[in-house]
Image 1 (cartoon, rainbow over the protein chains, first blue to last red):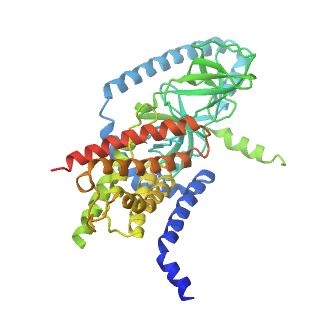
Image 2 (image 1 turned 180 degrees about the vertical axis):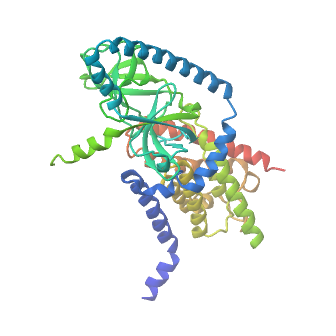
Length: 283
Length: 166
């Protein structure tokens, strides 16, 4: 008995090691499976507040570039409005079509919010971005996030006043896309494999897909997270998969994640309903 | 005793802040990140008990995790390194080295200190990347990531030694 006790006391650091590693791995597993680990992430109130102060200071750098970007975006929106007005005026002459068109444009039911990037580390395989809007601002899980240049990611976790975004630059990110001009209408998935923060990959692109480098990649709208047609990037390289069955296209992301400061969050009112419906399908 | 503790607490906070607010945001070429919080673990005095080192390292890892939204990864890696640190340090010491000292280039010599810190860094970076890559399978990223992060962190460790030379 004495020997066992002596042994335990002498090697107590082993138990501390096991305890601490146990806690760590519990955190890792919880965070990966469930959204319970909110306290241990930067969505934590105290941590988020510290980051807010830092990003306030940060945001003064590069104001000029930011300004130009917004101007560009504004111009684009203005031209879109003019276009839509023209379409509306044209359609107004066809009474029967109006209802249909309005139902299509409004019935899609997307809500938009703006938010500032509070923290945006890009140094790991599983990056997360923190935004300064949370559940009290109406942000929910699985809302889409995009910037003025293109898609950023999907809301992964929300706390009261902060939310965590799973960006395209995360090994777990999986975004359904479409290549503009591809009549075959294949819907490949965009996945990131770590490392280069400017590129991502379209995987499992069927061989019948017609495209060339320089083609624009946009969201497909199939996931109901993003409206269809938001820019993701441009194709700048193609290779065949090892089994030769598919193409794997390298996509230059249009969003510059390193200088991301403010984003739009888009929610689809129908998304929850659709999900509930899908859950009703018996397994 | 209290003075020593307060100094250590100050170093702990300063190192953690520098890591999460500055160094964690640097990702050279998309691969390399400097894990300078390892300096705090490397520089705990030789006589510190294993449990003490592990608890400090775990706290440091947890802070880095919370700020980086990577729960558990850095705390697991830092704890493992802290557990191994006495073995690594002792293997570089000759007989007759004073009982208690703070590991530094001046105390144990440049070459030994460099090897001591690079071995520790390799352990830390490999553990971090291995845990991250649980979800993504890519041995090349592991090699490039560990190599580049170790080199970049070494740069800062050497710089710290120069500044502390006096």
